[in-house]
Length: 95
Image (cartoon, rainbow, N blue to C red; front, side):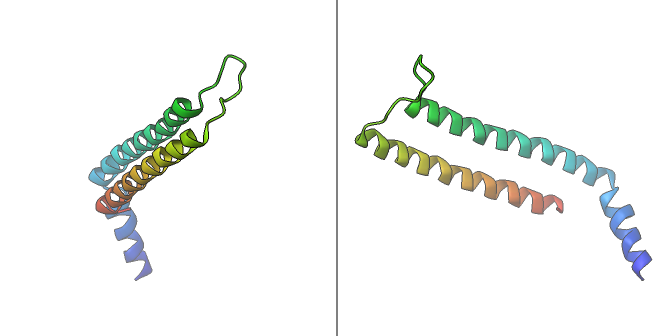
């Protein structure tokens, strides 16, 4: 029985050409999505705390800290949605 399950799992599913193609596409797409999210965080930091010529981040006023925090929370909320999309796609292809 165990050999039959192993054969079905490995030969029919994991080594299936369509599944392997889906896996490759998914991994590339996921990597691109995660890279985009990382760059969005960098862009947000550079927008609010950009480095001066002396190599130090600028100091935010209290008002700017609140606005930066709001922008960060909004961005992190968007990232959670994207992570949900990634997970849903992984489930769809059979991960």
